[in-house]
Image 1 (spheres, one colour):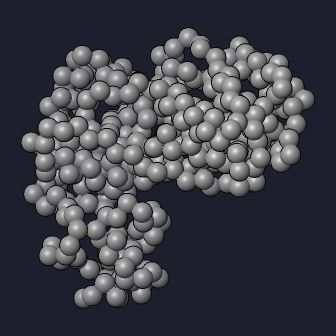
Image 2: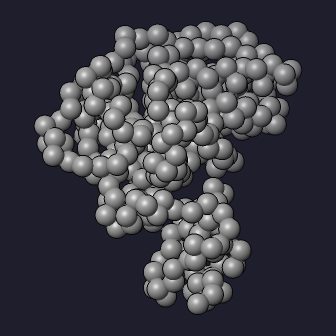
Length: 340
């Protein structure tokens, strides 16, 4: 059977089917899922003689197990973005016929008792850095970190958003709308990824001839990986921004979770938002946080689901190349998704 029948059933071109088979990174997740369903319906199995990367055949397709651990938090505090990450990991594991075991580990220094009898070949990680005991346990496996964890991992491979591109994109968006006085707002200064995006934002804005100011609050570090924001943090950032003179008209907020809090607080202070006034762009494209904001700010999609899928693929590569000494860090390009 040729890929032509698969393409016809999925409603795509034969070249798109080929890209899905070869795990091309620029295929939309929805398109890939449609092609995979068509392949399953037709019973189509790609030839191992095709060009491009091959799956890890020696992992005993249908029996190999990988683990996905989230350190330093519980399911009850999961963000909308994390749900997309988990979906991407699940789709990636299903596509490669892998068993997936998933667990939150609230104490990042304790190996969970319920995991004692679990067997798996490799590990995906997200969240807080593990303590020495858990680090020793995890060191026995190939490891791939997912996302821009609050503390940047210094071991294991990593698949993460391109935060430098996030900052560049945010600045270019505001510059293209004529803003020449810009600001970045951040209530989570101990998150290195936010700092990296803010640095790229400032450099790009300055290169574009704009004035830039950073407004942030350094609060007490939270024990929870997914932290909440206190009233004094909100008041500090909003009050500092309100007092700026001249006040910036283009604003980059570090993440959608923060913009959902800061935008209403700015409006309560009488600061008018929208085209021709103060315009905001934030990051992550987490719909539950953006829903109900008026005007709705622009947001940058860091493609969390794609990171989950790509993390599975890279873990398979690492399992086949465990002798490779180089530590690999892969960045996924963001996309601007809202143009108000």
